Image 1 (cartoon, rainbow, N blue to C red):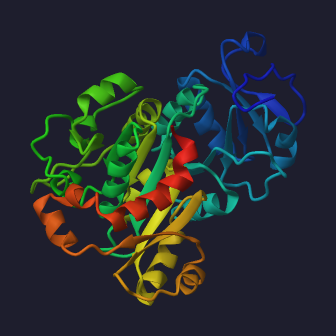
Image 2 (image 1 turned 30 degrees about the vertical axis):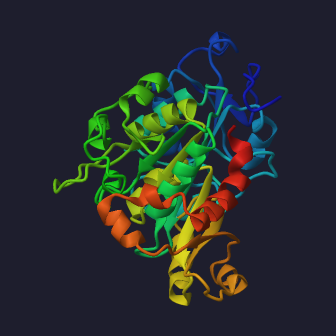
Length: 376
């Protein structure tokens, strides 16, 4: 059975128990798909039961990974409690690690070790988890989400993301570039598109539930042949965006665009909000040992997805890419050129003008050739 098929009703057994509010006889495959919770914590069980009921899903529970193993692959969504330390030899990773407020950074560290796709901190993350479970019934995962972040300050992640978006759009892909850093000054300024009509992040602050992909596309501004979603480039203090709203935007983006490029930023909250939505992550860093050391610290904050390095180098600079790769513990995917005048171009909103240079094209080709099988 594939991960997107609806499971057959499960007959209650000692280890696995339907626990939704509806009686077992009402669990029909054409009405609800199974969510599997693995935990021995009654507190977590109570929190998750309430959320699953709000999402209109059917929940089954196993006390530990051994009991869950026979049902793992038939579940559409798997929730693993933070009290679980061992997982079965499985065919796919757990979807969400669920824990309670007060567990702090240990949840994210455990998620990285387990290979969990997402983290939900309850009860605050309840609305996000309910939305996630509702969206998990959609059979098509949609477009590819590629995250870009800097291994150190001033690495050039925003520049790389803009050039990649421009190049992918030039290849005919439908592309959305998203600004994930509310403190970055506004991606729109680097595009000289602050006056472009369309929605910005603050307009989604109160968003809830599903967002229509077509309406999202129509509402977003465009520059360089691609859509973008930016924080405003003004002096106003950026407000927070609820993780459930971010998840709704990214879900609609996946269903509308073939490639979603996330300029993640480097703050911990930005990493947890956006990096964990990515299918793949690129870390941009200059060809310096200090930058490589800083990047190793960042790696521990990233989700367990495919991650590679983009090294920014000056022309005619001799690089020991193997040394950089070994220092960070990640492969080097591409060399990003240090184009003369890039800093001025960023200030003047002319980064797109530099996107056509030969060195930039070699860089974008190296990235998009690898990711090209993920979108037309």
